[in-house]
Length: 377
Image (cartoon, rainbow, N blue to C red; front, top):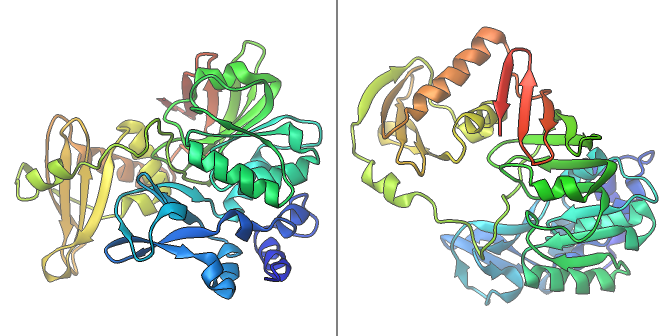
């Protein structure tokens, strides 16, 4: 396969010739790092074998898209032909443009020691090795031993040799680092990140269940200060087991016909997870909400909100309507929280979360502030 023209096209798509990342993208053979991946099919996910169709492999590997490489506990490398795997994605080779964006937020420079959290396919580590010019400055870490073994072997094939570590990214970290860039989201900044960050060091991460990128520089007291960036990103959350906890299917089924407390929202049904600011604000108010969308009778739009504490909401907007009929129950009124966020956007013209200042204590306690608004993680 002549992969170089494909990589050059990808570089032109996600960066530009004047960027320090141009050559890194252009010279990194992503296809070697992602030989098999999952695509939706058969009512679940089915593995696609890249080498079986080199042209399709090149076209997919060098597209600016995320490739799911692991579903539940099954990696695409180990999935049988025609096997249908069900469950939620648990690892991927992230969209290259997003990888470059996260690394750019890290402000990498020659001589700096980088911790690349969530090895995945090894692509982010490969780009960082090229950018820093010394593979020994890059440590890449993942909780899954198969992922780290496979990535290390494939990185070796393309001539890259970062330090590859199998460990829990929220636990003790293997050394001190000038930069920590996480390609996995956290609900709260681990204290171990602050202790492993060198004086003046910088961390970059996303917050679980949101589209928020946090950048922060270490302060003299051992904490960090920074901001919520104006661009957005969402990653899979950290995990300690082979897969994520199961979705709230039982609550979904048990409340499907429940009237609960009925009301009318002045707003039509919204696909919350496509409205990044609303989604992020709502998660800060009630972390852990699970969102679902669908179509009801007569083509009506429907949405569900579920929480592990037993709270639930179901809303329907019929064709031609601009309001929603809402049913909700449990200890919290989730839909009321959503309507409150939407009212705030209308009244103020924006939501305060993007561009917010970030203050992190040495213990990882994180506060976001903007104007008179504040949220604590």
